[in-house]
Amino acid sequence: MDLGLQGKVALVTGASQGIGRAVAELFGQEGACVALADIRREAAEQAAEGMRSKGQRAVALDCDVSRSDSVAKAHSQTIAALGEIDILVNNAGVGPPYLGKRIVEMPEEHWDVMLGVHLKGAFLWIRQAAPGMIRKRWGRIVNLASIHGISGGRPGIANYAAAKAGIEGLTRTASLELAASGITVNCVAPGFTRTPMLAVKPEMEEMMLRQTPRGALAESFDIAQAIVYLSSTQAAHITGETLRVDGGRFSYFLEPK
Ligand SMILES: NC(=O)c1ccc[n+]([C@@H]2O[C@H](COP(=O)([O-])OP(=O)(O)OC[C@H]3O[C@@H](n4cnc5c(N)ncnc54)[C@H](O)[C@@H]3O)[C@@H](O)[C@H]2O)c1
Image (cartoon, rainbow, N blue to C red; front, top):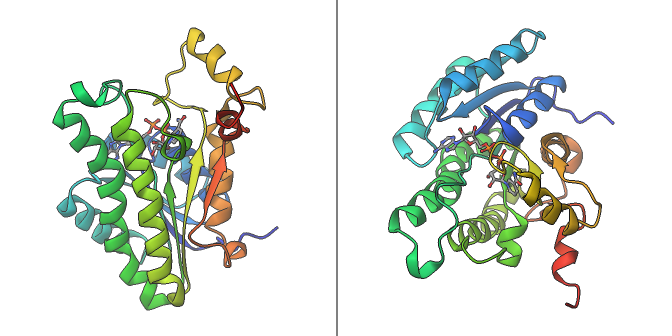
């Protein structure tokens, strides 16, 4: 299937490792020009260099997605290097040390950082990139949600679950505002995925495998495939949707105990 991504300009936040890096690499393989925006610029530069060594077009950008000035600067740099953005993937995320505290003991900073990177970051980037897509009358936006935003997850992740549930609301409203301009806005909600953020320890892995009916954790590439499909010309009629990519994990929550 031709995904129609040849020559499209894709910006991926948090693209230096994990899911974001896999998305950037898959876009590169499909012929897209890729901007890898990350707060860890050197790591993003290494990822971009790996792509360029395969003959792909890729640039690394220094960007803290939670700051509007940083987003505006990275946006201008993308346009200068590659052109107006066609595809935006809001993937940047943080986990520990901002996770693990129940609400009654959660420092305000944990709330602010989590909501700032995941939810405000997605808002800032959509606000920045959507006008260019509206002018072109074509665009794709994919936001990273999580099964924990759907289920609540477990005690100690209220800030993460709230941010991810918020991303789904943001996505649905953005899809309504942008649909008539040929822009789709969707979420991908991964289950347990083997990345640096998850940092799977052996004792955790057994629990995660038990809770995943497929009996395997996702690799970054499994999530990236779904994101790239939703970014394709083929996915024109899918908008405001959340696609769970979780090996059946969500259904596990619904099992009678
Ligand atoms: N790994 C999982 O099991 C899982 C499950 C569900 C959802 N997700 C979501 O998928 C996304 C990617 O997760 P991952 O597991 O690949 O994480 P990761 O920690 O491996 O990668 C996150 C990336 O975001 C970057 N980043 C952090 N703060 C940033 C900021 N302020 N500005 C720009 N970049 C920043 C990091 O440098 C890193 O490159 C996240 O939104 C995460 O919440 C992951």
